Each structure stands twice: as structure tokens, then as C-alpha cells.
Image (cartoon, rainbow, N blue to C red; front, side, top):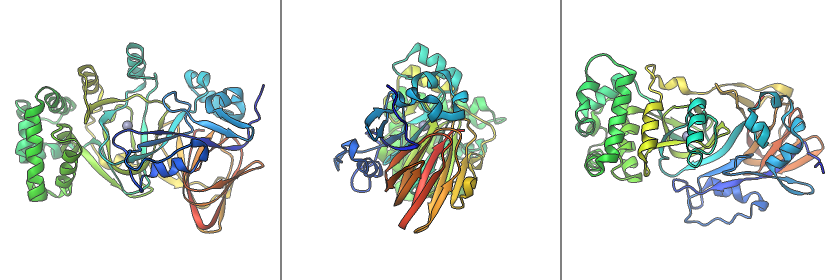
Length: 432
Ligand SMILES: [Zn+2]
């Protein structure tokens, strides 16, 4: 029996309770989850809530379509009417996505109460190989380039700093030099190179695993100095402003973990304001650090962690081999470009043009009592009401909007967003 597919429908979304999430009254993921009664969500004030997976057909956190005649698993609905839901995007889907009724992207609200594991997401070729070898740890065969778009002030470690800056830190900070052990000399001398950077990262992470207590003492010793002396403890250079504080926070999050050396002194620390967005290419190193963001990625849940949790040797080896160690270490390169989104006469919307095929985003900021029409998008999209209230209308369906409401809009239909007197802000993820 075929199900009728409305132009827009609400979604019931899965909450992920990873230990690094946020808890208590300000936990955004919990607030959003509670906005949809069908989620049957009751917040436990002590429990950290990390992510809300919005519009997912991924087996690790599938969404449910809430239809007039009852709920239906999103992937089943998609498989029952692929042409109608995907539109032209159907031609660009991977075979797996098409067979499984998945969207090309995974759209999440993410709240970091402490640092996430230091990680990369494997590129497509590596993901295919690892998934074949070890499907339990690598649940799919897709790559996972991703973005982090700040909802609150959002801190993230991502990409490597310029090697000359890392070298200065190693020279100035005794504990860091000691963490590199015998390889400090090689890292500090001669031409800068990807190999030297890779070897230094490998050494610190490997020693963090093999010589945990020794490395732990070094981390704790530096954290103590940072607490007492502030940025002076790490050389006091302009480029290091605030890093002493960040290092103390990392040690508070995961006491004595050598990953803190890599994050604070090898990587860029982004302090994003709401609406600012960075991207991480496949194999790019990152650890989200504090605050709330929209995280969006190609449809995959593959990750290789290298610090801030128990790490097995195989994973660490694969991480060390795969991690991108580019020589053009410019931090600004990773900001996602924005431009006005004007299709259908929209004038309060901004498009985030990601460097990836799988998805782009639109942020709409509507003042009180205003409305905005988005012209049809040639693929399925998922919209999150971030704040305010009003209505969302597509075809002949109107949905009451409030923070945390998540809807799917099928391909090629106009969307009308109307704000109440408190205004409304939405984020919409799409592929076309
Ligand atoms: Zn990630």
C-alpha cells in the first residue's frame, strides 16, 4: 500500500546521550527533543545530552516521519516514494543511500559540555576498506566531511597551526618538548614538512598510550603552571592568547591526557560566534570543544578517535597514517562561505555554500510578523526551528513552529516561513 507523502511533515528524532554532552536546564538537545511530544522524551537533569539526529535514516539513530495517518520510519517512507521525496537529487545519490532510503547528509544539533574525542573521519576509499575489515567499529562505507555552524559561542579545535608556530611552542614549553622526547630535535630542525608534523603528532599520541603516567604527569604539570601563570606559562606570544586557559580546561575534561598537547599547541582553536561556520574535510583533525552547534556531514557515522578516550592500537595506527597534515595551515581557509539566498524572493536568508556535494545550509532570521518564501529546492531538505515561533507551510500543509520542531520538506515545493511577534530563526539543510 502506498502512503501519501505530504509536502512537509514533522520528524521524531533520536537523541544521543554521549558523555561529553550538556546537562541541566540549558541543555539545548534536551529542550529540542521535548518539543516533539511523539519523542516521549523526559529530561533527566543529571544526564548529558549530546546530539539530536535530524532527518536521519542512519541505523545508529533513525528518524520517524510523523504523518497524518500515523508514524512511519523515515527510510521506509523514502523507499515508498523516492522520486517524490528526492526529486532530481535521486540521480546523484550513492547506490547505498538509494537502496536504504537515506538522505545524502546527516543533520544534527550538537552540544559540547567538554571536548569530544580527538578525531578524524576517514575519506571514502579508507572508509570502504575499513568497513569491509571491521564493520562493527566502522558502521558504513561512506566518507564524512563535516561542518560545525555555531548556535551559541562555539569553541572548536580543528586543522593544524602553521608549523613554525607549533615549533615555537615546542621550543618555549618545556613539558611539550619533553612530550616529544627524542623526536623533538628532528621536529625542530631543518625544513618544515608534512612528514615531520605527522611524526610529531604520532609520537605524542603514541606515548600518551604507552607511557600514560609519564605523559599524564607532564600534562598535569603544565596545566598547573597555566593555572598559576596564565599565558606566560606557554611563552606569552600573541598567537597563544587564551591557550593557557584552554589547556587547563582540556586537563579538567580528561586529566593527564596527552591529547591536550595536540589540541592546544598543534591545532587551531576557533572561537565561533553564532552563525559562523567552519568545515572539516575528510581525514581532517578536529575536536569540538565547548558550546552548541549545528553539525552536518555526509551520511556516515565513521570515526577514528585518537585521544580523550580508550584508544586501541589499530585505530591509532590508522589515524596516524590517514590524518591530513597539510603544509598550508591557514586557519581562515576553513570558514564556510556565505551568500544571500534569494530564491523565491527570500530576503532574510543566508546560504552556507559548503565545499561538499552532499549538503548546503540556509539560515533564515525573520523579524517579528514577517514572512519569507524559499523557492523550491531540487532535493529533500530538513529544517530546524532554532528560536522564536510561527508557522512553516508547504503545499497545503501548515505546521506550528517552535524551538526544536524538525520537519522534512520534499523536493521542488515552495516553503513559506511566517514569524509570530517573537520573530523566528531556522536552519535548513539540503542537497541539490
Ligand atoms: Zn567529527
